[in-house]
Every structure is written in structure tokens, then in C-alpha cells.
Length: 336
Image 1: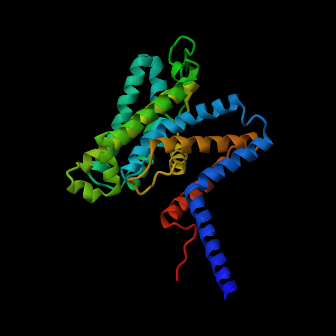
Image 2 (image 1 turned 180 degrees about the horizontal axis):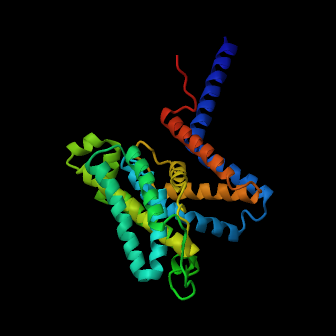
Image 3 (image 1 turned 135 degrees about the vertical axis):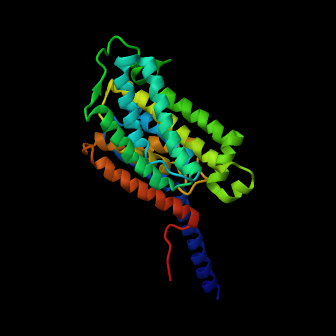
């Protein structure tokens, strides 16, 4: 009898222990994967954990991170923005092309104005017209890329007098020893974290994304909240274009191609729910850096650049699976 009771207790303890492990993996699986990746990369490359390489990764990830800050706000509000890649191409080509024609300051102002206008179009169609955000932004991705090709004539653009302008400051400069792209990324993330966590506007965005109908009945102007999130996203894209254009001092007409996937990967890694109503700017920053370090590690190990897309896809699937597992409180689900 005692032996049967002991066996029963051991089975119960085993189930509890297994449930605890599965719960931990579903909640912290991405972090575990990242730490294991860091360990493996450090074994194969002594340069991986060097200070210079870490700063390089953070600087390179800043462009994706700046865009991800804005898109995180859109996703928390219950929508998507797949047009950011083409919008980045448009804004970068525009500011670089206008630099020599109207001067750097005017070029920056015009670029911000037109990029915000594109964001307003997204916001109008999705927020005010209530069209599906996936369809609208996917269509805008194609439309904006077409506008870029029409504007540039299919040609790449460059700044002629690269030595006689202050424009490179945004992409190559330093302030107090910190690279300007990193500083801009950090300041935007800090500002939006404060806005989303400690202001009434941020609480309204969470409410709209979490339960749109309840937010409307609560007196929240849902349409205008959604509209504003796309303006924020467009503003962040314009900031990223400023960094990208001033770093390269030129632009290909498809320079932003694929950025929407990388941005989404970083956001999902940070734990922001694609269903809306949940997420954090700081976690997005962490997700973007995780993605950057993994891609850098693959390059240092000698893998070609295109393998990053395969790994990015795997990371997205893994992150979504673990997010669902965390909500279900189990890694796998069974159907009868």
C-alpha cells in the first residue's frame, strides 16, 4: 500500500516538474534560445563578444529598431504595417536626391512631410475607412515601391559633394562617444515607452488593440487612435531613412526591401502580440538586438548573407509558437 502511494506521489511530482519546465520554456524559450546561440557563436568566433563587434551590431540594428518602435505602436493598437520597407526606400531616395537640389535641411523637411503623408494615407484607409490593415499596407507596399521607381526613373541616387555637407552626421556622427543612430534609437524607444506606459494616449492604444468594441463604448475615439499610430510609424520610418541615407550618402531604389520582415521578426521576438493589446517598446528593443546578434553570429561563422532569411523565418515561427504556448500554458496541443 505504501509502495503504491509512493509511486503515485512520484508520478505526480514528475508531472508537476514537467509542467514547470514546459511553462518556463513557453514563457522564456526565446531568451533560452538566444543565450544558447550567444554561447555557440562565442565558441566559434573570438571576435563575437568583443566590444567593437557588440557596438557594431547595436549600430547596425538601430535602423531596424527605429522602425520597429513605430510599428510596435501600430501592432499594440491591433493592426499591422507591412508598408514600412517600401516607405523606407521612398524616404531614403527622396532625401538623398533632394540633398543636392534644395539643400540638406530642406531635403529633410520635405522627406518627413511626404513620409508622414504616406502614413496619413494608411491611417485614413485603416482608421477612418476601417479597411483591413493587412490588405491596405500590403497594397501600399507595392504602390510606394512603384512611386519610388517612377520618381527615380529606376536609377540609384547619390550625393555629389559628400565632403562639403553636415548631412553625414546622422548616420556616421558621434555624441559623447555614442553613435548618433544608436542615440536616436534609444531616445525614440525611451520616449515611446514613456508615452505608451504613463500617458492616457498609451492606455487608449492598448484599450483599442485589446478590445475595440469595448473601447468605443468607453468613449475612446478608436478611428483617430488608429490613424495616429500610422503617423507615428511613418515618423519612425522617416527617422530611419535619415540615418540610412546619411550613412551611405546614396540610395538604391529598393534599399528598404525586406525590412518589413526583419521589423516584424524583432517585434515578435520581443513578445508583442500580433492580436493587439499587449506589448512593450523595451521588449521590442531587446527583440531587435537578439535578431541582430544572431545574424552577426551567422556571418562571423562564415554563413552567406542569404541564410539570415532562413534563420529569420525559423525565429519568427518559433517565437509565434512559444507565444501561443504561453497563452495555452502548454507547448503542444492535442485534438480529439
